[in-house]
Image 1 (spheres, rainbow, N blue to C red):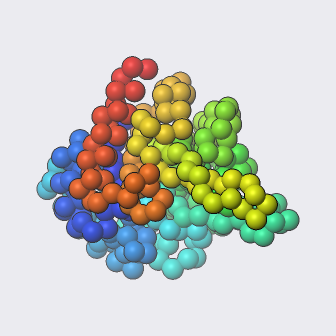
Image 2 (image 1 turned 135 degrees about the vertical axis):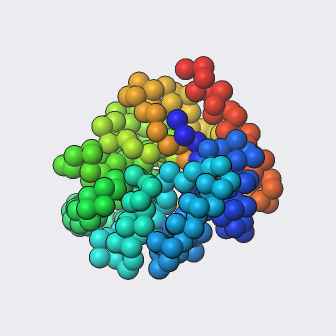
Length: 278
């Protein structure tokens, strides 16, 4: 497997600084943001990504994937992003289709599938495999819904970006496992995070409410050893992106950039130890 560090929470670092920090923490490279507000902007995709690869080569790391915001083939700069990626990258992460309102889920899934068809057709021209993130919350790729989006596409054309945090949050118990079973032929990327549930205020009915917070990999609720055992069973040996989303109120504790990098290094050591024991 190739382990990369997601750069979303490293926006205060330059690409060169992010490469050096990832390498020092033990990573093979970066999961680089190529979306609005990212390290590379979509309107500058070709030049920006080429420059990022040049920097990564100089620093001795790689950029095997990028995280984009693409949700339609005719979205602004969608083709520019895919064209820029195709020179050295085979898989990209797409953006999200949100679920709303209640009562129209089937219609929304059909619309998302049509948009995905357009993206797949565009990406095929550039020999790129677009990947849809198995997310949680009001997202149309939530858990088994991702299977409904992908089931009529050849796995060579589109992939599933599986994520034990999101999959176990939505499918605690055995739900995550059954989702992975359904998605196995399409698994093309893996994103790793973990989480805890933190009590918040009670609602208007007096029921205790909880908030999901990102936690160190060894301390969270997602069963990472079991998840990676199943990945081993299906023969996955590709890119693994560590989310390291430890800044702001959605973290177990808001970390500074140096603290985030230190925690990321600890997370990577833990994950490699888990995989070595399987």
